[in-house]
Length: 244
Length: 296
Ligand SMILES: Nc1ncnc2c1ncn2[C@@H]1O[C@H](COP(=O)(O)OP(=O)(O)OP(=O)(O)O)[C@@H](O)[C@H]1O
Ligand SMILES: [Mg+2]
Image (cartoon, rainbow over all chains, first blue to last red; front, side):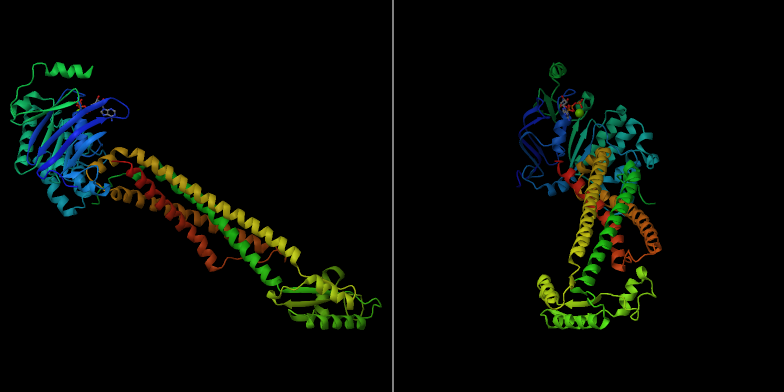
């Protein structure tokens, strides 16, 4: 079933719970238009990663409707999901690099999975690794890389296959501010050529430094704040309450 | 340079022990299969040799005269040849009977001239479909020639074939149990591998790998392990069978019928290796696809 033409992703009254635990997200409704750029904020444990997991189809909601690129996920046949997933690039909060593969092979993975030729891999992967400043680490294994280097490999892997939707979970958590800003510029470049971007972050400076609207999670509810909207006085406290 | 496999399955512990387990199971299965093949060819041979035949024994004439016995023999032959369902009835030549008795009585003793009271035998071939009533035939013969016995070999042949059949059934059951054990072993080994590589598999899933992409890797790995184990097992089984075969021919006795597997039977034994590789491959693939099917 095809819904809402221009929306990359659409949530209607989505609720999430893990097992028999409490509901982590209640009645989340949102639309991300094609070519939009959003931050996703909220205290630790607010459910940012959980929301992103729904977007990259790693989890199913316990209720509500999700559509990705116009496909209602609940009614899309399971065999059609891989091709939807291939259009989503994900930077995981914990990187999830494969330890026994080199940086080059890790980044090449989405291309391989999609059946790209060895030529394409050889052409594009070193170029992108060069771009994120890792040309010297092409053959390095993740265990020998620093946190920030791993993060950049993870980012390269997320964007190598030119996804239509890029979901980045704390992509700047382990890097210096100037690298964080450089990576943000990279995301903006991709956004300019049409990629829809969602960046989950704790970093207030980053959110205030770039003029993008913000999805904010608190107490399991999602609110959408315009670009430049100030942080609420009690935002951290409210989040802290949510944690208790 | 060939790139490293995404799933390093060859490094799993199961890659080391599974071929040996499979080799052992293939050896057992091949031995059971060989037993089935040998026994079923025995049964067939016995059945062919002995069904459709009767042996009629004519007692020596009371007067002990060879000529009288000969007359009784001819009388019986006459009756037999006129009985419906009888194909041929031939007297076993005295010479042959002497040979049969030689081990007990000595070659020199058993001669026509000595005139020992030797019973005469008639080999009767009957039409298998005729379903001859042996008891009725017996009665009819005895009316004319008393002391005649009819042996249709039925009793001991039936027992022997039943025994062979039972052993064959047990061997088939062993074969089935080994197959089930092999499937269970591969299922557990595959599940263990799935658990070991869960993170990578989840990652592949999330970046859009089709189930078949992951299943293929397990598929080829399992085929490789299955073939290795299967060939090793068949090699051991061949060595064992050849050894047993030479011991068998070493036993100098006509008690044991000669055994040898024909080319098709050897092919069946070798096919156990392929069956093992097939079971291993299909089981691994099905196990992986079922596990992946539970992912969203
Ligand atoms: N697999 C899971 N099973 C059970 N509970 C989970 C699971 N994943 C997350 N949770 C719970 O869901 C809540 C939200 O977690 P989530 O990881 O989405 O938060 P987050 O906003 O990403 O936090 P952080 O900023 O620390 O990354 C937490 O209370 C967490 O304990
Ligand atoms: Mg998180």
